[in-house]
Image 1 (cartoon, rainbow, N blue to C red):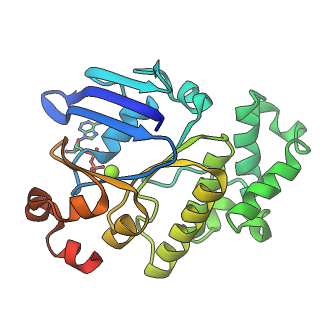
Image 2 (cartoon, rainbow, N blue to C red):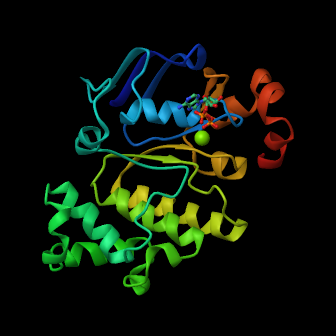
Length: 252
Ligand code: ADP
Ligand code: MG
């Protein structure tokens, strides 16, 4: 088994408050790994440390054996690690097509200032990516006017435009209705399988977590308190006491 991400003894403190406490973590090629934990456990911070959106106080992050600790986000993305955010991160005034096209241009190092002159770049690939997330029909609608669930689908297309090996999704179903959640998970499931992507995600819906994860790690006050196969985590007494409670039974 190839280890893609290897994290050793990672710490992050915000002026004395420790948000990430001595976290060591491996992500294996091809796996779907969920990070769970209550609000404020440090899940988003952990992602920020991996993708270069924050620098750790201590510790190392390696991707494919290469030390990427503190590397800026645009370089991390180029190595094959793409992410989506807990909060929507699209250009709301641009069309869906333009949002994806700009992502493709940025991957190729083409200047987005030249955008108006470049309307014919990556046209096929842009439509293909929109098709992949079931948004081709809406290609020329304004992104900010889409329903919330569809904006999240658009974010996925933008992340895929980076041609990643690893997809990091931070609460991909946050704020979604149950039917939007189902649709989003089916989409993520299909895309990761079709493209052979490794998936690291955070998620609050335990049905989703236990439904699609190969392994699960549990964060609590910035520390990993348990990790393993879904059944191991579900039956871990600390996890049940601290976090899962009834949710573990619901998902069983
Ligand atoms: P989660 O995603 O699990 O809900 P976060 O990683 O967002 O948790 O936050 C973990 C803790 O770190 C929280 O207590 C949060 O208030 C704190 N935190 C996160 N980012 C910052 C920041 N930039 N400055 C200060 N504290 C922060
Ligand atoms: Mg978060």
